[in-house]
Length: 131
Image 1 (cartoon, rainbow, N blue to C red):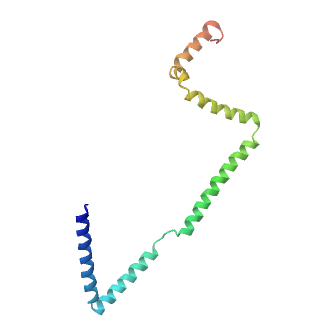
Image 2: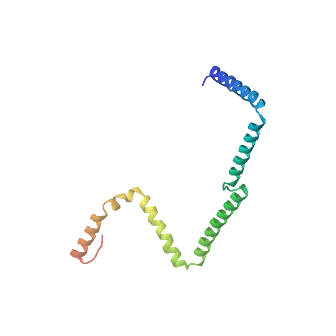
Image 3: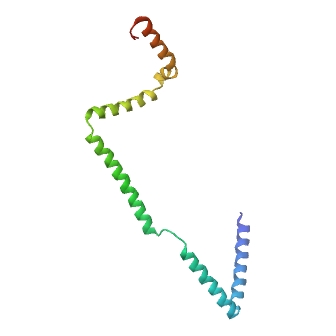
């Protein structure tokens, strides 16, 4: 919206506000009372809706952070308690991820069926699988 249209829009809103304020000053007592009652009813209905106050959000955040920290500490303690043999076998799994991410070894995984067949056929012909 350009500046002239924005200025005209503000002027129009100002005239409407002024006209409504003038009419509100001339309202009859019964209408004012009914409006006040309707306002109070609306405010009471608004208060009855469920909402979380900011203090509850702090507790939820603190509880979630505490649970995450407890889970992490449990994981670390479990790693400390495990025998080294199990830890080494667990760490060996991570080595597989490194091999999988290495693109130079990708041909082996793409043609894995062929290499398995080759290995089996070598086993049958020579009696051992030496490549």
